[in-house]
Length: 87
Image 1 (cartoon, rainbow, N blue to C red):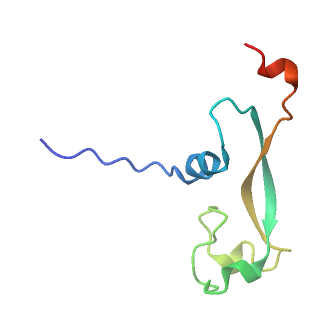
Image 2: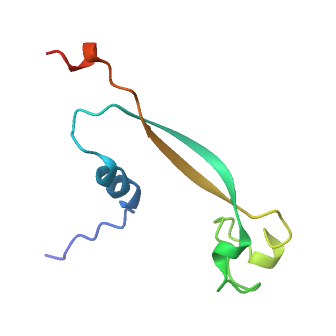
Image 3: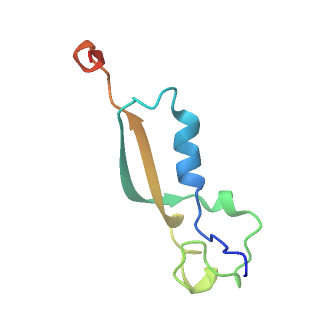
């Protein structure tokens, strides 16, 4: 039988796990759209597909914008009170 290939990108989960010091931590997150500076994509050519995942090439999409609009996920740890630590 063929090998099942998992194509999911776990980089966000792996990043969060690296930030955790214990599995009891209370984390929160927010998804937002954020302009990433063009300087972060130095090897990108104008004919390449735009990193914003629009399906258009870079020149027709984000090349003339303030940056490349991408989904950004912000994580933060909620403050822990003494009451939360009691079992």
